[in-house]
Length: 108
Image 1 (tube, rainbow, N blue to C red):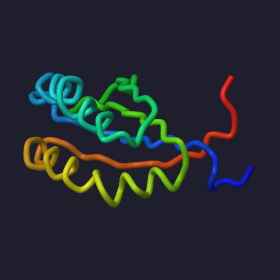
Image 2: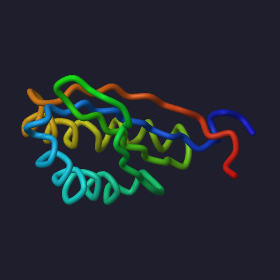
Image 3: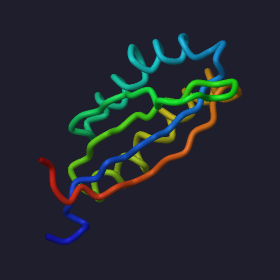
């Protein structure tokens, strides 16, 4: 199977200022992640707290599973800009995010 046809894990790791972390987490669970899932591009999602001591913030990883790279690219083009804009408007000055893409070679 070519890598283009492999499932894609889209990981968004976000560090959130402590004073905004509970509000941000509630919004992610109640609004943002459901909105991303309703976009129809992802098969499933998970949000996790990164373990460890952080200075001034809490770090979370949000994983979205996508059917393939074509579907992920469609998400980036058609849904992601508005969703990221909404996040930035509400929490941009309280968060720092980085994104990682992974091909899923096998699930067990």
